[in-house]
Length: 111
Image 1 (cartoon, rainbow, N blue to C red):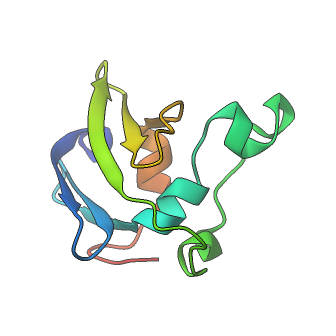
Image 2: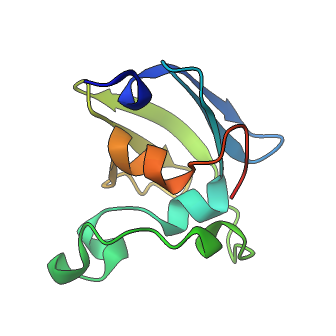
Image 3: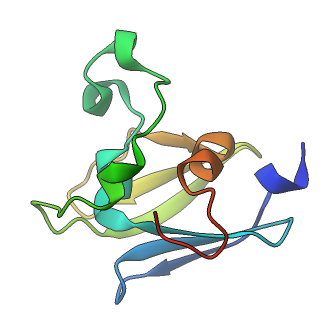
């Protein structure tokens, strides 16, 4: 697997309400939790199987969140994804590394 799809470190910053991922190639991605929750890849959040795998619109990270969603914990899934457990109990979304990286391509930036 390419270094750009390998995670070196994951930080949950509850104060800033963002997930920070440092990739093995040195790239830092910062994801606002509200947008990350809206981008949940599970079939329920995506609105059915026919919508699975569609690209995430970066504007989703700029929209204000109606709910105060925080990350309760993160579980590694093999060497290809993470499962985020949210403070509302939702935990069915498996965020593949490739999808996460494509959602925040800007170095050290928030989309």
